[in-house]
Length: 232
Image 1 (cartoon, one colour):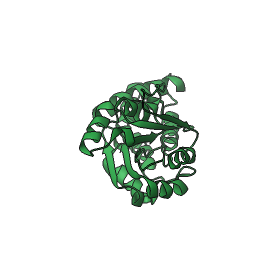
Image 2 (tube, one colour; image 1 turned 90 degrees about the vertical axis):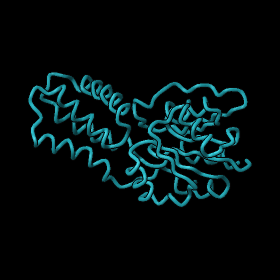
Image 3 (cartoon, one colour; image 1 turned 90 degrees about the horizontal axis):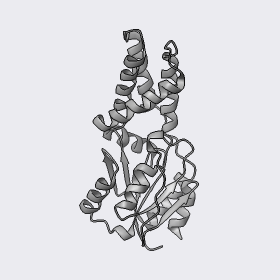
């Protein structure tokens, strides 16, 4: 394949992320086990709150912390005590303090991709958190640019293409989220590589769309498989 521009997602594409949120949520739900709601009902309400919170405040652990506090206040019959407030803050802080766990094939594949193509990290979340995770991952040297976006939708990809002067027919978006990485990138005229992940956040799930004529969609089981296609 001739040299391309590869826009690569970070969380749950390059390193583990959602599993740490799931662990924090499990701890949070155990704190709410005195309520009359079932775990499924509590999780459904938390999902709805997170959807609204991310729309207003963006992604990352600060937004997640706000969602946990609001969920507790809505579902718990007892007032939020200082002790519980401290525990909830700890749930969110534990995510930011996790060691970076690269997903299989990432460490081996990125140098080979960077030798052939131009790599840009395109993610969303809290800017400082994402920059810190990239620094701790040891992968920053493979990327020519880092973009931490408030949202990854069609408009954001159009703006990115215009600002970075991307040739859309020679640009791929690689990630694990149909909602944020694949479908809007295809809508913006890019190619896309969907990398399956075992525990994608429920709010990122969406049915994959067929690529328009002249565009390509790769569906891969892991990052190494995506890299192999792009190195052919």
